[in-house]
Image (cartoon, rainbow, N blue to C red; front, side, top):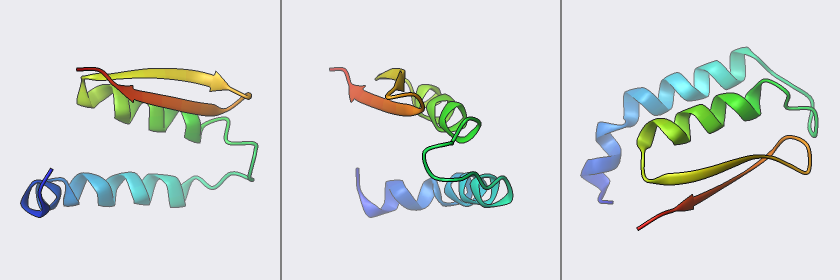
Length: 64
């Protein structure tokens, strides 16, 4: 992914950041943040997303 590609995601990244900052959660208690991030990753396609790792953890593996 190039810098130009990333700039295309700038508005999306700002939206994600705003969402996370407007809905703060304590560390290790990210009950709403984890599913939000997982849904963003799934929206990209091409990622195998495993949720609930150690309670609220997420593992995303790129499939080829």
